[in-house]
Length: 507
Image (cartoon, rainbow, N blue to C red; front, side, top):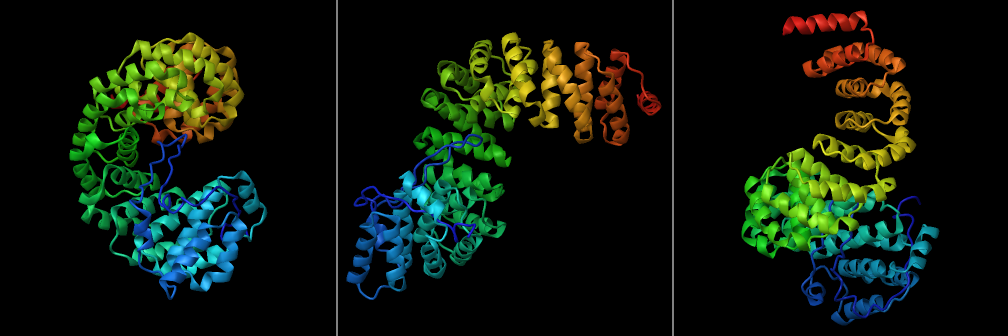
């Protein structure tokens, strides 16, 4: 089978005597493009789980025996044997506990390979999950969903849609959740890009009614998961903002960063929340990890929320930690300063020096955004621009049309010449012109004219493409396009001459 419902891999290992206590602990990981993945909400005590409803064995002793048998499994095969031999007597809790044990066993790479090489291995557990999910309570559903996600991520094998459909059906049937379970369930569904808008709406309504029960971690995780899934819920975000105010001092740095990122990513404006967080962040910024620093700056810039004191503090922290900034952190931080019009010569100088050493690790978007930040801020960095040109030349075919036009604009705006880059970019641009937006066409030709790098073939092809899209050009874009032709000495086509005359008539 191609999906985890049909393919699964095992894990070996580690002592599991304490795993019951760790049952609901969700470890933190990071994502290179998104903010840090949230800490998953912890369960208070394992006994809370053991006392839940939905356990079907006929006697308490039988239930305890099954629980102990699962706990004692030191291999994936042993867990699956329990599922095969005792599946009929298992409660939803026992199924969830199997997933919990499995996720810990997958810390051993040999178990990961075992599942990848034996696509049918986990089929009995997957089948039991579908059969038992109809009687899962919120805690068991949350734990099962989370551990399934961890298994899928570690094995790089997707969970079959039938499983998620069954879990979603069960989630929709419940109208009461603990706050911890809400944040864990939406995290799981958002992580695997599953869950209908109906599910997120349903959980949002429940969350709003119980928002006062959420601690900082649950608040942060919940809005993060909604933003990650791209599901907008204005009422939930408003309620979460209101609940966050009196609890901000208890927020950990990752919870602050993820909260800001969530509101910015979903585009939900909350000026009071951002202002309050700014004051709290200034006090804690030196304890922020580099990704959290970067995400914080990006979030304020994305929302257009000015906070000079915060950005002064961010600059100081970033300079001290710049050597451990990854490429994305450098790019996003500089972009944020340029976007809000803040200047910090010391930060830009330190970042340029560090970026030169890491430029080969920059993605095409990160190259484009970083150069744009220096150009927009009018901060020269000739060595960085030289190094970026060499790397960009090797990656030009991977640049999107917008990234390409922004990069060329940056070289022209800062006045930095790179003949080799512009020559090769002209060839690439000519072949991609049909994908260029009017703004990208205008910016690209303006860049070539501004640096005095004339490419007749590019200008001819751009004229033909511009004519096709004339009705989509904004006045300023058309004006810049016409100026580029005049400055380069390249003759205008009759159609562009007509467009020029029409533009003059309007003015």
